[in-house]
Amino acid sequence: MLGAACCTAYSKKYKTYFSYNSNAVKINGCRGFKTDLSDASQVKNLFQKIKPGLVVHTAAQTNLELCEKNPEVAEKDNVTATANVAEQCRKNSALLVHISTNYVFDGIKGNYKETDKPSPLSVYAETKTRAEKEVIKLLEKYFIVRTSIFGWNPIKERVNSVTWLLRDLGAGKKVLAISDQYSSMMLANDLADKLEALFNSEKYGLYNIAAKDKIDRLSLAKKVSRMYGFDSKLIEPVTFNEFKKLGFWKAGRPKDSSLDCSKFEKTFKMKLPSVDQCLKRFKELGDNDYLKKFKISK
Image (cartoon, rainbow, N blue to C red; front, side):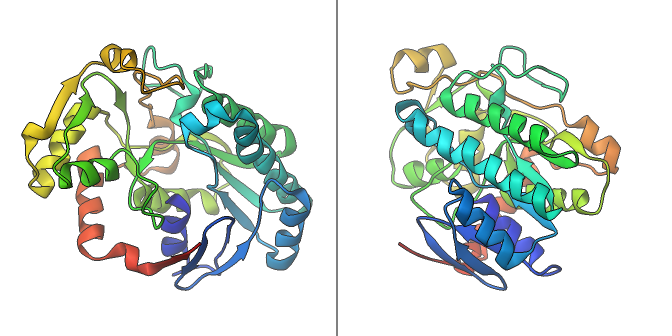
């Protein structure tokens, strides 16, 4: 999702390449290479072919329940792959922009700053936290970006916090929407645009980049329902604790993983969009057949 958004944005200005693994994808204006990033030799070969000056590492295993059931998969996809990419960036003097997550925090207080200590609640979050440490250990100059994103995914089966609402509400199904779980959700395409501020900068380090405000899942469901003309009666409110008791989650999730992004805004003198602005652009992209830019074959 984010990788596709980055390719769409950057190929207009830069010579842009991407890697894929299980899903072969074609992206207009870019060349793709099949690569298992957890295989050090394949990553080395990829760098030798492309000789990149800049790498935006968006790949990760983000399925929390899969990570919880198969920690070895999470380790391979999130830690080993990141270490391999960072190592080749070090050897080839390429600048790395590594994408991390708001889920490194336990969600007790919310509005987390870059200086707050991570306290992961799941295997996914724990491996993403260790991936950050691999980047810091291997590189002197890097960008680590913590974020929370939604958007249009070329692999339609991979739904996120907005597209699952479209799927289920659009099919007339009831949805349980949590009234007190918050995040600073940002559209993947908006994040791709903001990341470009890092490319020619030497203000290295860790940054939160997400929406400038936060939203709860219930409010999000109501906004999406209004935007698309769905029946709001299909939305059933539930509290965070009530939902946990239903047993759908095995992996822990933070209650309030919202991010304070003032460091990025002040450092780069850029304003971040609101959740509402991100949702508006999301719909505009969908209305303009954004996904037609990509072709997937398995």
